Length: 545
Image (cartoon, rainbow, N blue to C red; front, side, top):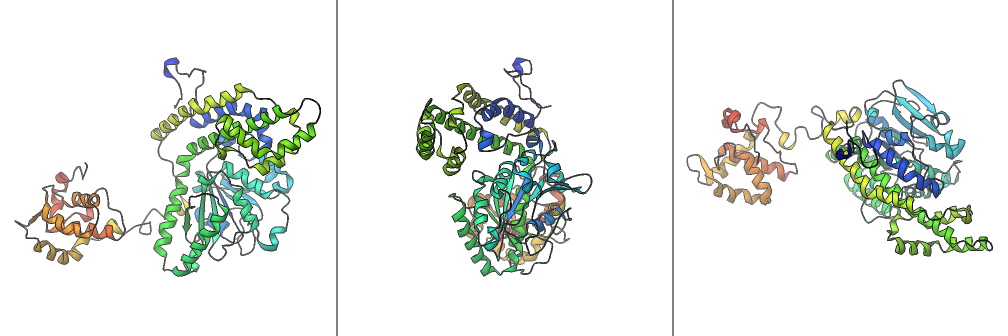
């Protein structure tokens, strides 16, 4: 059992709180400290619905967003390695609904209206978007190993050209914002032949404002162009994204072809494999980092709620007691940018913590400022105390849970195929080359290495470290890398290299120059034949510092 407690107070902290898990601690802090502030200053009406227990207990979620026919549904099919209920794939806009693909003991589809009344699902607050949305929202359940660790949200294909003028009947950008605040990863998919970012897609990306750390970009169907075209496509995509995602950092873009069909262009196969592996690792890490992500989102929410409280109480303070309320309301709304600046100086708030001015001005039109609550210092102080002290306690608890529990990783589906057997990423490459052969892989180039070795005037079949250094530094690798190569190659730890050890050193240099990483310990298949009989005693503690 994990407890965030002060053990000097009999197993409880100063307020008598005991939390068995991080999730329980987050939920308790939100309910007792942050929710009262949100309810008092109408935060849930302006920004985001109140969080529920399912929001804290749900599995990590991945949201897929992109224009139609960019391969969103196919991407899910690729990850799961099986069809899911309600799946439709085609070149036209086939997915016209939000589909939450989740784990279940039996296959089935739950319609939106039934889904938003289920207390065990984190979708109850979507009820506010009305029937027009709920009729386009379903949950697809099925038994699948991947879905035991994560859930995936498929979205309708974003429209372009004339099609984007057709109303969906609900606020598409607002729904995306709702999901963006709650998911662990947002993947924007682009087609190598369809890089234009339509107005609706731009609006969708802007809906993820403040969630930049969750966004990843996938350039799909990259095998359909050659290397030269791919470079141009990549540059065009980065230029297009730079106009929409207003951050100085460049978004991480993964190149590949995420489906199970043969590659149309084999030139970049290795690149696509490496990119897919990087993306898989990013997704696989989500369960392990889920508690930290929820903690981070709670902190962001608390900062916004505090700023919102300052804005609302300031508007209340500026309103007249009796006459001229309407004119004063209009004046305050028009001067909202100046109010933001004043509050920044008064309360030492970062400009990035404030909500968008235009949207706030539009929302304020519908409220009577005289009915807003005044400033309640105790509520603000309670949230400040939570951020200053209690969050630190939860951070400690997160580390305790991580150290006491086995690492949680997404497994199954495409993730399984990327790890095991000869088709796993990196199998038979770099230091792994020759692992499944009987011959010593270094022997293939040993005659060439022997010429260099004997030109260094060995004594009793060995060259000194000084002589070896003169040759090894010609590789132009840094000393830190050459030092590791020496450590791996000097198998008997005598400070000298025989012909086999020298050949091994040259082989490791070759591996590094080809762009592969060096092993931390020398694999058994790379051990020189003459030294294998000494392995049990000479390498029982292999290369530890």
